[in-house]
Amino acid sequence: DAGVIQSPRHEVTEMGQEVTLRCKPISGHDYLFWYRQTMMRGLELLIYFNNNVPIDDSGMPEDRFSAKMPNASFSTLKIQPSEPRDSAVYFCASSFAPGQGAPSDTQYFGPGTRLTVL
Amino acid sequence: AQSVAQPEDQVNVAEGNPLTVKCTYSVSGNPYLFWYVQYPNRGLQFLLKYITGDNLVKGSYGFEAEFNKSQTSSHLKKPSALVSDSALYFCAVRDLTSGTYKYIFGTGTRLKVLA
Image 1 (cartoon, rainbow over the protein chains, first blue to last red):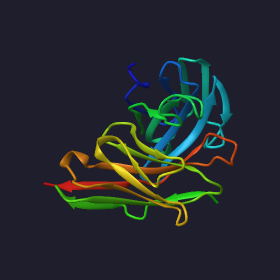
Image 2: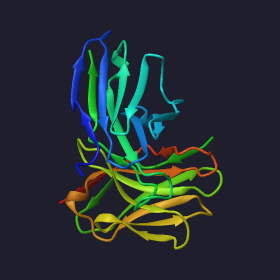
Image 3: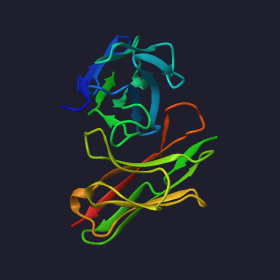
Image 4: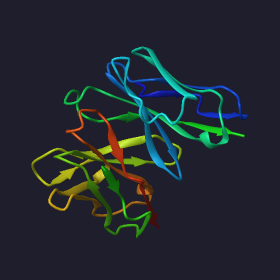
C-alpha cells in the first residue's frame, strides 16, 4: 500500500480564496482523521470519521472549515474563505477500528499539506 | 482537563550517547500511550505503544519506552543515538473512558543528535 496520500503537498493562496485539501486513506482503514499543525498550537485534531461518517468535529475552528468523506477512499477538508491565520500544515491520518489490525490503535499519517494564506 | 506535556522543547545529545525524551500526562482511567516521530517535511510515524503489562516496551528503529502509570509518565529511550534520529518526537494518549477515538498529542520534543 502506498500509505496515506495527500494533495496538494503545498498550497499558496490569497486571503478570501477557497482551499480544498484532499486525502486518500489506506485501503481497509475504518477511521480517518484531519489534524492541523502549527508552531504555536502544536498538533490539533480537527475532525474524525468512522466508516465515512463524521464522529467528532469539535476541533473544527470555525464555520469556514468543513470536511467530507463521500466514500471510504476519499476525504476533503475545505476552508472558505481562507484567512492568513489558517496557514499551517494539515495532516490526514487513517487507522483500523480500535483493537483491530496490527498494530491496532495506530494512526498512519500522510505527508501533510503545507498551506500558506497570504 | 486532559493533557499531555513534554517538558523539553529540545534535547541535544552527542552521537553514540544514550538519549531520553520525557512525557507526562493527565488523563482519567487507563489510557493507551503512544510515541510518534516526525522527520522534516514528513508525517508522523508510529514508534511504539503501551496498553498494559510490562512497563518497558520496545519499538521501531531501536527505540524503547518506559511507562510509569503511578507517575503518569513515560520516557522514550535509545541506548546509542544516531545523527539520523534527529527529529521531532511526540507523546500521545488515547483516553479509553471518553467514548471517542481521540488522541491527545503533546507539543513535541525536538531531538538533535550531534556528530
